[in-house]
Structure formats: C-alpha cells, structure tokens
Image (cartoon, rainbow, N blue to C red):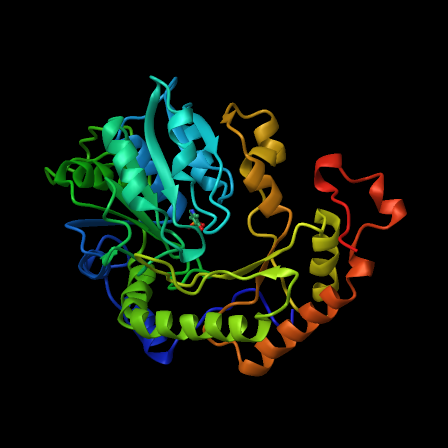
Length: 395
Ligand SMILES: *Cc1c(COP(=O)(O)O)cnc(C)c1O
C-alpha cells in the first residue's frame, strides 16, 4: 500500500535504547521492565502496573485474577476487537454482547442492566478508537450490581474522563502496544490497577504462577509465560517519553481529516470534542450514511485499495464472526452494532502521515461518494444482500 492504514514511528534514540539492552546481560525480567511499568503507572495514575507480552494476555490475566470461570457471564460490546470476548471463553465463561451508543461506538449504558443476570460477574468496557466510554454511568451500574469493571483501554492511552486518565477508573485497566497503537513495544500489553492483591496475582500468573518468595521452583497458581522482554520494554519506555507529543500530533491529523471531510453529507465524522472527555486518537473512523449498503462500503474499500490506499472495516462485529457461530455466547439486541459495522471506514492514520497523503485519501473518498449511484447495490448484487442490510436509496 502506498498509504497504509498504520505505520510505525521509531526514532534513532529508540533504536539505541533497544541495542543497548541487546549488549546487556539482562534480556528479560530486568530493570527495563520495571522502568516501563513505572512510567505507565505514573502516567495514568495507577498504583500498580504489570507488563505482559500482549494486550490479549493482559485482558486474559484480568479475567483470571477476578476468578471468572465456567457458568459466569461477562458483559462486553460486540463492536470491538475479538480478544475482548475470546479471553472470557478461555475460562469457559459466557460473553454477553450489549449494543453500542451510535455517537461514540462505546457500550450503551442504557442497555447494560437488561443484560445482567445472577451469573453476571463483570463488565468489560472498551474505550473504542480512543474515545472514553460513559464511565460515570457504567461505574454506577457496576457498583450497584456488585460487578467488576475492566477497562479495555488498549486503544486509549492518555484519554481522559472527568480529568482522570482512563484505565484507573475501573477495578482493572489494560493497555496494548501492538505497532498500530499510539505507542508500541513491537508486541506488548500492561495491566494497571489500584489493588495490590490483584497486581500481585497478575504478576504471579504472567510468570508460571510463581510466588515472590524468590524460590523460582515454587508455583502457587496455574500460570502462563506471558512475560515481556527487556528489549520490548526499552522501546516502550522511550516511546512513553514522547507520548504527549505523539498524542498532540494524532489530534492534529484528526482535525485535518475533519476539516477536509466536513460538509460531505454522506459521511458522519467522529466528534473532535466530547463533554467530560479527552480523546486519545487511535484511528479516524467515518461512517457512511444509511443509504449505503454494506456492499457499497466494501466497494469503496476495494477501490481505495486499487489506488494504493488502505481503508479498514473496523470493527466487524464479534457475534457475526464464523468462530462465534459455534462459540457459546449470548447476544442482546445489537441493531446499532450491525448497522454501524456495515458502514464504517477507518482511514489511514499514523504519526508520520503527510498532509498531501491526507488530501489524497479525502479526495479519493469524496470522489467515490459523489458517484454514489455506482456505489449502491446493482441489480445483480441485490440477490446476495441480506434484506436487513439493504436500504432504499435516497433519490
Ligand atoms: C489492540 C487491542 C487489544 C489487544 O491486542 P493485542 O494484539 O493482543 O496486543 C485488545 N482490545 C482492543 C480493543 C484492542 O484494540
């Protein structure tokens, strides 16, 4: 792709920090991991941070730490990354999918209570695309029903709700550092919490269930190897030093997209500002208006690809994934999830994207939308479309 969906941004100083580790005697469980954890904890305002080898591992350890198991239910959005539901299934518990708020793509608080049963143990709220969920409402529901609240802040490092950084408002918070995230460690993740007991348990679980007695052959939990290397953490620590500058740059890119796409009637743009919230820009996702079918959206994705521009179908609903046909779960009413996921377009978004590239993306996209007669399903396509996905064109 000439203009990719995401691209890494690694400085020479970061490369030096990594090579320095490679010349040292400690490649895992050393000082860089502690430094990185401390930097994350200080930044988000957490008492404890435990770094692991991926965001998915971090989420899984949250589920293990609060002892979720067979027969338990956990409320999650379906408009999310699939790991959110998979980690619940790893422990044979049941994901219960709840619909989203069309304005923010986050869990809709008004639909959570109807999904709660005596088996419900937790809610995983996802701060989708870096926009904080309605935490006041969701926390209140969690507390009133004695549920754990896990914040999946994998896409939202640095985002704020009521002046507090997300990740520390629930019982446990998770960040991820895959190369498309705001900052990267190559692969990596971290759990943050104010709870010392949960932090100690997660530390033990990431390292084969060892306790901290110093005897590395005493295992007190059924643990994993979810450790992250010193090499990854050295990169993460350096990237953390640039985080504020990176977030400012990403906000600029979002503003530029909005400036260029404002006034295109067929597009709903993400809000740049929201009451009580500060967005940490992960991706810039536009939504086509309802007269577009899923086939029309997919045509745009293909056409953009033909021009060397990567555009993502972010997210495809989890409950419609082939693997979830046979994976136990419960689905509430997911009308908004299905409507939105058929119409979203994630545009190329990375620190180093240039103005002329943003301009090209916007021109290609608006050009295609202008020819929207061509975008709407043609007679031969119509038969393939599920009735719920086909809406009458607006003349
Ligand atoms: C990236 C991401 C994760 C974790 O991803 P890994 O690839 O395992 O690091 C989890 N949830 C969401 C919402 C994400 O975007």
